[in-house]
Image (cartoon, rainbow, N blue to C red; front, side, top):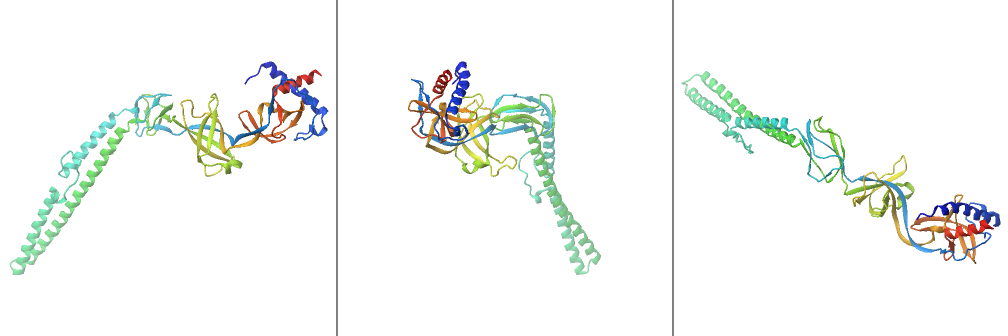
Length: 406
């Protein structure tokens, strides 16, 4: 809470006067920057002013680190085909749903290519004796005209060779006639094999034309770009009428409903990290404290800074943005009672933490060493005992005013 300007101006000077008097009146060892057990010259406590009790309080053990928010999903969107940009349906900051049409490339060239491949497919089907249109490309080799014609010639050659064989055996025809019939049969047999191979080649061409048709359809479909997930447009790179190469960036899309909190943990703290630990963080400009769960730990410590990267997924209530700086606490141990002193009782003078213990109606300066901080309380590692009363800041100022007036 902000105090009046007059108090902010009075406190450093008054504290300095009080500290100077206490040091001057106390033992020489009190001037050293260490925890002192000696008693300083007591200063009377102003009547009616507040004191605070040093007492055990539950406090979690946490690691305080810094990190930033990043989108859980981030994509640079581009078209798979080259062409002139016909329209862009979104702009910076536009909210989109998965499946929304974002970009349209002029489709005319791809429509013509599709018609061309459809005609080539129909031609390939006709060469196999199939209807011009249809999805069934199965063909019986023996029923094609090419194979039937070659098969008929082969059958005739077989019959001619058989008659020649009989005539030669009976001595009616010369052996040369049999040899001619055998040669004709060999030619017919090879033509039959060629006919089968030709039909198989046409089948392969038909499969190729079918693939060309699928590619042409896909390219036509790729002239339209749809949102791959729910998100917000982060950046727009192209405008209507621009000619784009395949793969050219058009839009940046980020997912905003869930963000990724990424922090770096010092090497000395890594051994105490576990998946599932509670993570609390705050961001600049917001008073909310957000809670998440530690979900991912990097398998290795970075050699350049001796840090381990950890991540937590954060449900975005609508006020968080990727790139925000986050002051983060990771709870590594549940709350346990530890000796604490109110933060308002601890003053820092010349880099030394001090409190003023109230004893027998007097203020006695005590140098302490503190640890964790939670809310309005600080862990006391050295210098105080449970049950002791200390003066709050207002009491110290009042006492300092008394000293300054002496």
